[in-house]
Length: 348
Length: 193
Image (cartoon, rainbow over the protein chains, first blue to last red):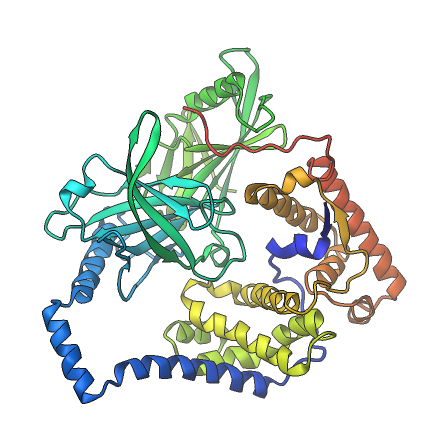
C-alpha cells in the first residue's frame, strides 16, 4: 500500500523545531475569531439559563416533581470520586496521569441506568476509566459482567469491579481498561468525544450473553498526557526457560505513575497471528519467577510488590514488554529503587 | 504573564490567558495551517482553522500538560488543517511523499500504531540536521526552499538530506517487517494464562 510519509508522521509530536513564521495570519483576526467562539459558548450556556418566568415556574415544578435526579447524580459522583481517591491512596497527591471528570448528568439511561465517567488513569499503553453506574438495582448487578465496546467497532473490553455494589446510592463503580489504538479503545490524535456501549450480560457456554446496554461518551486525552518514565538498568538479570533450558535476560524496568514494563530478551516464538507459543509461555513463566518477589522502594520507606504484568507485547523477535497497571497511581518522584533477588537497582 | 501563569489561568477558564496563547502561538499555528492548506484555500480559511486550534486548547486545557502546549497546538493544527483540506482535495503537495508499506501491517489499528511507532523511532534516531529537515518537511509541510533558507543551506543539500531520511525510514520499516510482504508482523495483546 502506498502511504504518504507525511501521513505516517501523524502520531509524531514535535517541540524541537523553531518554526519561522511565514505567511502567518493576523493575530488580531485569529484572536477575534477565537474570542467569538468562546462568547458563543458562553451565550449558549447563558441562553439555557435565561428562562422566561412561565418557563421558570414550569421548570421548577418539573424539577420538584422529578426530585432533581441530576443533582442527586452529581452528589453521588462527587462522593464516589472522593471515595476512589481515598481507596487509591492519592488524596492530596498531584499525579498528572490521574484525571477526574465533572459530567453535568449521566450519559445513557437507555436501559434505565446511566453512566458517568468519574476519572481516568493511564500508563504507557492503557487508559483505565473508572465508571459509575446508577441507579441500578442489586438484582441487575448480581451475576452480571460488564463489557465496553466502541460504537461501530468489534473489540470489547471487560470491566473489573472497583467496589461492592452500594445499596444506599444504588450505584456500582467499575474500571475499564481501554487500550489506545485498538478497536475497543480510541486512536492517537483523536480529540472528539467517542461513544461507547456499556453492555450488561453474563457468561454462558463460554460466550457473553447480553442482557441490555447503554451508551456513554469519553473525550480522548491520551496524546496530551505524556507520562514521565523512570528507567532502571537491571544489567541482564538471567532467567531460565523451564522447557528448553535456554537463558533469557531482563534488561530494564520502566516505571510510570500508572504502570511498570519489564523489558527482556529471550529466544521466544510466536505464531503467525502473534500469539505466544507454549515455549514462549515458558519464557514468560520463567520471567515471572524472577520478578515475583520484586518490590519497589519509596522515599518514605514503604514498598510495593506484586509487579507481575497483565499482558505481553511482542515487538520484533527479541523484545517483550511485560506491562502492569499498578492498581493505585503512584507519585513518580517517590520511587527510589527496585529490589530483585536481594539486589537493589536505582533509577538512571 | 509568563507561560506557566498563563497556562494555570487558562485552566481556570481565564479568557485573558487564552489571548496570551493566541498572541504567542498564532504565528506558529497559522504557519503550520498555511503550509497545509494555504495553496488551496483562502486566507480566511487559514484564520478560521487557526482559531479552531486555539478553541480546542480552550475546551481541552484541563487535559493538556503544561510543558506540552506547543506540541499540542502543533498536532491539533496539523490535524485540523488536514481535515479541512480533505474536504476540498486529497493532495498535500510534498516531494517524494510516498512509501510502500505492507498492506497486512495496516489491517488493524494496532498494526497501524506499530507502524507509526516505527516511524517515530526512525525519525528520533536520525542525526541532526537530517532530523530537523525531515520534521520540517514531513511534519510541518515546509517547502524545501523555505527549509533551505531557514537552515542556511542550499536546496539541493536539503533534498539530499531528505532523501537520506527517507532511506533511513524505509530501512527501518523493512527491518521491522512493515514494508515487506514476506516479513511477518506480529502482535499479541494478551498473555495466555
